[in-house]
Length: 118
Image (cartoon, rainbow, N blue to C red; front, top):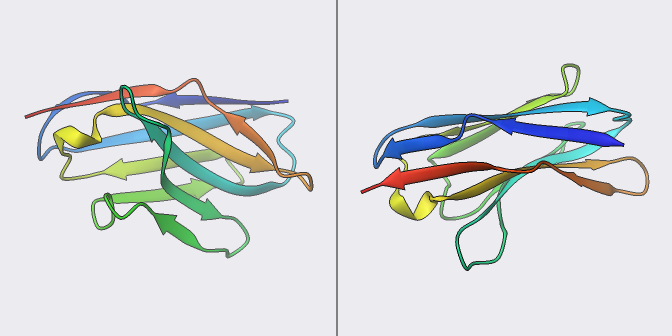
Protein backbone atom coordinates (compact mmCIF):
# COMPACT_ATOMS: atom_id res chain seq x y z
CA UNK A 1 0.00 0.00 0.00
CA UNK A 2 1.01 3.57 -0.67
CA UNK A 3 -0.01 6.49 1.49
CA UNK A 4 -0.04 10.00 0.06
CA UNK A 5 -0.37 13.11 2.17
CA UNK A 6 -0.87 16.57 0.68
CA UNK A 7 0.02 19.83 2.38
CA UNK A 8 0.28 23.50 1.56
CA UNK A 9 -3.30 24.41 0.80
CA UNK A 10 -4.95 27.49 2.21
CA UNK A 11 -6.56 30.81 1.49
CA UNK A 12 -4.87 33.25 -0.87
CA UNK A 13 -5.90 36.36 -2.74
CA UNK A 14 -6.17 36.38 -6.50
CA UNK A 15 -2.76 36.89 -8.05
CA UNK A 16 -1.02 35.18 -5.17
CA UNK A 17 0.96 31.98 -5.00
CA UNK A 18 0.88 28.69 -3.15
CA UNK A 19 3.07 25.62 -3.15
CA UNK A 20 1.46 22.23 -2.61
CA UNK A 21 3.48 19.24 -1.53
CA UNK A 22 2.77 15.52 -1.56
CA UNK A 23 4.68 13.04 0.56
CA UNK A 24 4.51 9.35 -0.23
CA UNK A 25 5.17 6.46 2.13
CA UNK A 26 4.64 2.73 2.26
CA UNK A 27 5.46 0.06 -0.30
CA UNK A 28 5.87 2.48 -3.15
CA UNK A 29 7.71 0.34 -5.66
CA UNK A 30 8.14 1.65 -9.16
CA UNK A 31 6.46 5.01 -9.74
CA UNK A 32 5.23 5.35 -13.30
CA UNK A 33 3.58 8.74 -13.05
CA UNK A 34 2.83 11.45 -10.52
CA UNK A 35 0.17 14.07 -10.82
CA UNK A 36 -2.15 16.63 -9.30
CA UNK A 37 -5.90 16.70 -9.81
CA UNK A 38 -8.50 19.04 -8.45
CA UNK A 39 -12.20 19.05 -7.78
CA UNK A 40 -14.22 22.21 -7.41
CA UNK A 41 -17.65 22.21 -5.74
CA UNK A 42 -20.27 20.47 -7.88
CA UNK A 43 -17.71 19.69 -10.57
CA UNK A 44 -15.90 16.56 -11.64
CA UNK A 45 -12.32 15.90 -10.67
CA UNK A 46 -9.97 17.12 -13.36
CA UNK A 47 -6.33 16.77 -14.21
CA UNK A 48 -4.14 19.74 -13.29
CA UNK A 49 -0.67 18.44 -14.09
CA UNK A 50 0.92 15.07 -14.56
CA UNK A 51 4.47 13.89 -15.10
CA UNK A 52 5.69 10.50 -16.22
CA UNK A 53 8.85 9.28 -14.55
CA UNK A 54 11.96 8.05 -16.33
CA UNK A 55 12.15 10.97 -18.71
CA UNK A 56 8.53 10.82 -19.76
CA UNK A 57 6.36 13.75 -20.67
CA UNK A 58 4.71 16.36 -18.47
CA UNK A 59 1.26 17.66 -19.27
CA UNK A 60 -0.78 20.55 -17.88
CA UNK A 61 -4.39 21.49 -18.12
CA UNK A 62 -4.80 24.40 -20.52
CA UNK A 63 -6.25 26.49 -17.71
CA UNK A 64 -3.03 26.33 -15.67
CA UNK A 65 -0.34 26.37 -18.35
CA UNK A 66 2.25 29.02 -17.69
CA UNK A 67 1.07 29.48 -14.09
CA UNK A 68 1.56 26.09 -12.43
CA UNK A 69 4.68 23.93 -12.32
CA UNK A 70 4.84 20.32 -11.23
CA UNK A 71 8.03 18.78 -9.90
CA UNK A 72 8.92 15.50 -8.26
CA UNK A 73 11.77 13.66 -6.62
CA UNK A 74 11.52 9.89 -6.92
CA UNK A 75 14.36 9.30 -4.47
CA UNK A 76 12.64 11.33 -1.77
CA UNK A 77 9.14 10.24 -2.75
CA UNK A 78 7.94 13.81 -2.84
CA UNK A 79 6.09 15.89 -5.37
CA UNK A 80 5.18 19.55 -5.51
CA UNK A 81 2.93 21.89 -7.39
CA UNK A 82 3.98 25.53 -7.59
CA UNK A 83 0.95 27.68 -8.29
CA UNK A 84 1.37 31.30 -9.33
CA UNK A 85 -1.03 34.00 -10.49
CA UNK A 86 -3.87 32.19 -8.81
CA UNK A 87 -7.42 32.92 -9.89
CA UNK A 88 -10.72 32.42 -8.06
CA UNK A 89 -11.53 29.64 -10.52
CA UNK A 90 -8.54 27.71 -9.17
CA UNK A 91 -10.47 27.20 -5.94
CA UNK A 92 -10.79 23.46 -5.38
CA UNK A 93 -9.63 20.50 -3.37
CA UNK A 94 -6.31 19.40 -4.82
CA UNK A 95 -5.40 15.72 -4.83
CA UNK A 96 -2.06 14.04 -5.20
CA UNK A 97 -1.96 10.94 -7.43
CA UNK A 98 0.70 8.30 -7.96
CA UNK A 99 0.57 5.54 -10.57
CA UNK A 100 2.66 2.64 -9.33
CA UNK A 101 3.91 -0.72 -10.49
CA UNK A 102 3.44 -2.82 -13.57
CA UNK A 103 -0.32 -2.94 -13.01
CA UNK A 104 -0.47 0.87 -12.98
CA UNK A 105 -2.23 1.04 -9.65
CA UNK A 106 -3.59 4.47 -8.76
CA UNK A 107 -3.12 5.90 -5.29
CA UNK A 108 -4.72 9.11 -4.04
CA UNK A 109 -4.22 11.46 -1.16
CA UNK A 110 -7.13 12.83 0.83
CA UNK A 111 -6.76 16.27 -0.68
CA UNK A 112 -5.90 19.78 0.41
CA UNK A 113 -8.21 22.75 -0.02
CA UNK A 114 -7.09 25.77 -1.99
CA UNK A 115 -9.31 28.84 -1.81
CA UNK A 116 -8.58 31.88 -3.95
CA UNK A 117 -10.48 35.03 -3.01
CA UNK A 118 -11.25 37.74 -5.59
